[in-house]
Image (cartoon, one colour):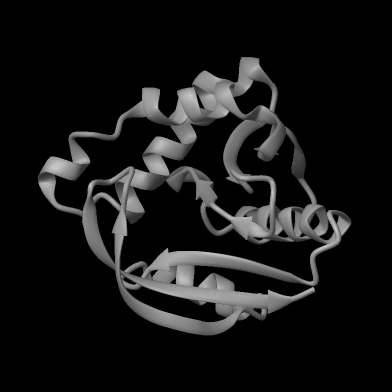
Length: 159
Protein backbone atom coordinates (compact mmCIF):
# COMPACT_ATOMS: atom_id res chain seq x y z
CA UNK A 1 0.00 0.00 0.00
CA UNK A 2 1.54 3.29 -1.00
CA UNK A 3 1.97 6.01 1.55
CA UNK A 4 2.11 3.60 4.50
CA UNK A 5 5.35 2.84 6.30
CA UNK A 6 5.45 0.05 8.90
CA UNK A 7 8.49 0.20 11.16
CA UNK A 8 9.66 -0.91 14.60
CA UNK A 9 8.57 1.33 17.45
CA UNK A 10 11.08 3.56 19.17
CA UNK A 11 10.80 4.84 22.74
CA UNK A 12 10.30 8.38 21.41
CA UNK A 13 7.15 7.18 19.59
CA UNK A 14 5.39 6.47 22.88
CA UNK A 15 3.42 9.69 23.24
CA UNK A 16 2.16 10.04 19.67
CA UNK A 17 1.59 6.32 19.11
CA UNK A 18 -0.11 6.23 22.51
CA UNK A 19 -2.51 8.94 21.36
CA UNK A 20 -3.28 6.99 18.17
CA UNK A 21 -3.82 3.77 20.11
CA UNK A 22 -5.99 5.40 22.73
CA UNK A 23 -8.21 7.17 20.18
CA UNK A 24 -8.69 3.84 18.37
CA UNK A 25 -9.45 2.11 21.69
CA UNK A 26 -12.02 4.75 22.60
CA UNK A 27 -13.82 4.30 19.30
CA UNK A 28 -13.66 0.53 18.99
CA UNK A 29 -13.57 -0.79 22.56
CA UNK A 30 -14.76 2.10 24.71
CA UNK A 31 -18.44 1.64 23.81
CA UNK A 32 -18.27 -2.10 24.57
CA UNK A 33 -16.70 -2.11 28.03
CA UNK A 34 -18.31 -0.98 31.31
CA UNK A 35 -17.80 2.66 32.31
CA UNK A 36 -15.53 1.75 35.23
CA UNK A 37 -13.27 -0.08 32.77
CA UNK A 38 -13.17 2.94 30.42
CA UNK A 39 -11.91 5.02 33.33
CA UNK A 40 -8.95 2.64 33.84
CA UNK A 41 -7.53 3.24 30.37
CA UNK A 42 -5.96 6.46 29.09
CA UNK A 43 -3.33 7.72 26.69
CA UNK A 44 -0.72 7.06 29.35
CA UNK A 45 -1.70 3.36 29.35
CA UNK A 46 -0.78 3.10 25.68
CA UNK A 47 2.32 5.31 25.96
CA UNK A 48 3.60 3.19 28.86
CA UNK A 49 2.99 -0.01 26.91
CA UNK A 50 4.94 1.34 23.94
CA UNK A 51 7.86 2.69 25.94
CA UNK A 52 8.01 -0.50 28.01
CA UNK A 53 8.12 -3.02 25.15
CA UNK A 54 9.10 -1.20 21.94
CA UNK A 55 10.82 -4.32 20.57
CA UNK A 56 7.42 -6.05 20.32
CA UNK A 57 5.62 -3.13 18.67
CA UNK A 58 5.35 -1.86 15.12
CA UNK A 59 4.08 1.59 14.25
CA UNK A 60 2.38 2.62 11.04
CA UNK A 61 3.07 5.98 9.48
CA UNK A 62 0.86 7.58 6.89
CA UNK A 63 1.81 10.88 5.29
CA UNK A 64 4.61 11.19 7.83
CA UNK A 65 2.30 10.84 10.84
CA UNK A 66 2.00 7.93 13.24
CA UNK A 67 -1.39 6.50 12.32
CA UNK A 68 -1.47 3.24 14.26
CA UNK A 69 0.36 0.49 16.04
CA UNK A 70 0.41 -3.29 16.34
CA UNK A 71 2.08 -5.66 18.77
CA UNK A 72 2.99 -9.20 19.65
CA UNK A 73 3.30 -8.25 23.31
CA UNK A 74 4.78 -11.54 24.48
CA UNK A 75 7.09 -12.05 21.51
CA UNK A 76 5.30 -15.20 20.39
CA UNK A 77 2.63 -15.91 17.74
CA UNK A 78 -0.17 -13.95 19.41
CA UNK A 79 -1.09 -10.58 17.93
CA UNK A 80 -2.05 -8.69 21.07
CA UNK A 81 -2.78 -5.27 19.60
CA UNK A 82 -3.87 -3.60 16.38
CA UNK A 83 -4.89 0.04 16.76
CA UNK A 84 -5.50 2.52 13.94
CA UNK A 85 -6.36 6.14 14.79
CA UNK A 86 -9.91 6.90 13.59
CA UNK A 87 -8.79 9.67 11.26
CA UNK A 88 -6.56 7.15 9.43
CA UNK A 89 -9.09 4.31 9.10
CA UNK A 90 -9.94 2.98 5.67
CA UNK A 91 -6.46 3.35 4.18
CA UNK A 92 -5.20 -0.22 4.68
CA UNK A 93 -3.18 0.50 7.80
CA UNK A 94 -4.71 -2.29 9.88
CA UNK A 95 -4.14 -4.75 7.05
CA UNK A 96 -0.50 -3.71 6.67
CA UNK A 97 0.12 -3.92 10.43
CA UNK A 98 -1.34 -7.44 10.56
CA UNK A 99 0.74 -8.55 7.57
CA UNK A 100 3.93 -7.13 9.09
CA UNK A 101 3.23 -8.85 12.42
CA UNK A 102 2.52 -12.12 10.60
CA UNK A 103 5.93 -11.82 8.91
CA UNK A 104 7.56 -11.35 12.33
CA UNK A 105 5.68 -14.35 13.71
CA UNK A 106 6.73 -16.53 10.76
CA UNK A 107 10.35 -15.38 11.16
CA UNK A 108 10.16 -16.65 14.77
CA UNK A 109 9.37 -20.10 13.40
CA UNK A 110 5.64 -20.21 14.11
CA UNK A 111 3.31 -21.76 11.54
CA UNK A 112 0.14 -20.13 12.93
CA UNK A 113 -0.73 -16.58 14.02
CA UNK A 114 -3.44 -16.12 16.65
CA UNK A 115 -5.54 -13.16 17.70
CA UNK A 116 -8.36 -12.53 20.13
CA UNK A 117 -10.97 -9.81 19.60
CA UNK A 118 -14.05 -8.64 21.45
CA UNK A 119 -16.98 -10.31 19.72
CA UNK A 120 -18.87 -7.00 19.45
CA UNK A 121 -15.98 -5.39 17.56
CA UNK A 122 -17.47 -6.13 14.13
CA UNK A 123 -15.00 -3.95 12.21
CA UNK A 124 -11.98 -5.81 13.61
CA UNK A 125 -13.59 -9.21 13.11
CA UNK A 126 -14.34 -8.33 9.50
CA UNK A 127 -10.73 -7.30 8.88
CA UNK A 128 -9.26 -10.48 10.38
CA UNK A 129 -11.68 -12.73 8.50
CA UNK A 130 -10.89 -10.86 5.28
CA UNK A 131 -7.19 -11.53 5.94
CA UNK A 132 -7.82 -15.28 6.22
CA UNK A 133 -8.28 -15.79 9.96
CA UNK A 134 -10.70 -18.53 10.99
CA UNK A 135 -12.70 -19.09 14.14
CA UNK A 136 -11.11 -21.09 16.95
CA UNK A 137 -13.56 -20.35 19.77
CA UNK A 138 -16.01 -17.88 21.23
CA UNK A 139 -16.86 -17.30 24.85
CA UNK A 140 -16.68 -15.17 27.94
CA UNK A 141 -13.14 -14.29 28.95
CA UNK A 142 -11.83 -12.33 31.92
CA UNK A 143 -9.51 -9.58 30.67
CA UNK A 144 -7.08 -8.81 33.47
CA UNK A 145 -6.02 -5.39 32.18
CA UNK A 146 -9.68 -4.38 31.75
CA UNK A 147 -10.78 -6.03 35.00
CA UNK A 148 -13.97 -7.43 33.51
CA UNK A 149 -15.42 -10.35 31.58
CA UNK A 150 -16.16 -9.83 27.91
CA UNK A 151 -17.43 -11.92 25.00
CA UNK A 152 -14.33 -12.81 23.01
CA UNK A 153 -13.68 -14.43 19.64
CA UNK A 154 -10.38 -16.24 19.13
CA UNK A 155 -9.07 -16.61 15.58
CA UNK A 156 -6.05 -18.12 13.89
CA UNK A 157 -4.38 -18.15 10.52
CA UNK A 158 -1.92 -20.62 9.05
CA UNK A 159 1.17 -18.80 7.84
